[in-house]
Length: 205
Length: 63
Image: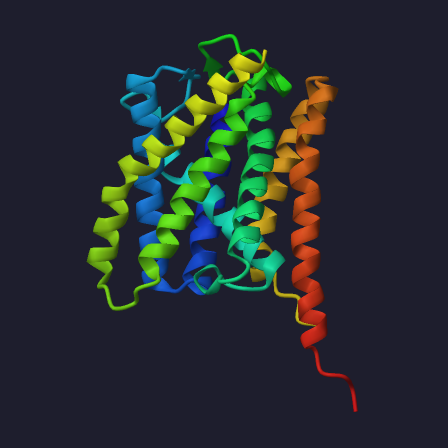
């Protein structure tokens, strides 16, 4: 089942990359998929190396114990949440002005909903083993902070992506460099906010 | 209204994952897990209906 999941994730990533080439254009697509791919993989590597919250099951292709599909896993769901939100609001992300706050709420909710689907499915086949006993659990023993992790990471990445692309005078290489250099910051923001949520939950209980 | 398959791709990918998830949850009799798929299913319907609503309004009336 893990192999089927890996094939499905790669298949959906190919479809979404093809969609984005027509929808965003070549330059924005390259920027989006490369920066989000590196961010996603780097995030997983960083978390599993320095903050062993969870370990992975027996994935087929791994690099330094991280499944290779992580290069497209996060970016695919960032892209889906972005397109769904744009379709709800009827405006493209780069043109959001007054609807910005509403858009960020939708992005967050879509990513959280995706996390319910993914984490529950993954728990069924031992794709992820949580190393701690959470205070509050969702389906399949997933800690309640996991959906927040999805939402915060997507929001932090897409806000950065949007602000980098608001200035059209920058060349692609500069935009790429800014996005790649901001990856550690995005991860720190996500993990920091998760720590705060986790501490608040422990305090409340 | 122009219903393009291309517009449906971001929904199709989630539908594909939803199908695999629901079928596996039924097969392994984890019936309570099926509830985890409801939020993304409803959000997908909401998003795609908003898009198609907009497409319908853009369509010119017949003379």
